[in-house]
Image 1 (cartoon, one colour):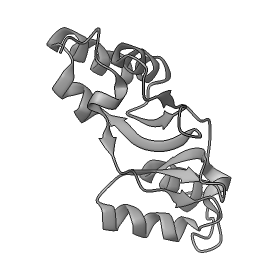
Image 2: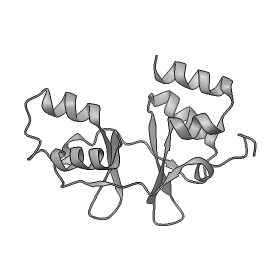
Image 3: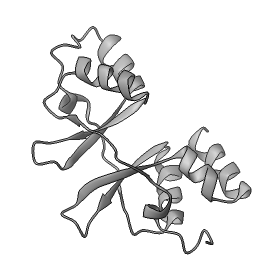
Length: 143
């Protein structure tokens, strides 16, 4: 399938797990360890996406600032939220990730109550875009 006609749902990783907005950073750290990931979406009690947290966010905004991991809530580090519709073309995901210099992009199904259904990662892109597109992505995201 050509890059121009592929949709985000065709390349995303399904089954993304969330840390709850009221869970602590210690909970998030343990989830990352157990799942073998470096970031987690933050979901509210309404099961809607509220933000993203990375291992780097925890180190820089929590540990380095002397905040207590067992009392700091995920919602406190949610940051700016970027997401993409599952039916968007992958070129749109690529552009969004480059523009905002992000390596992981939550995927929402707007046809199904705006549920979080997956994640687009660098690895998903690397398997599905041209070498030239990948080189440009790397240059823009890591610049």
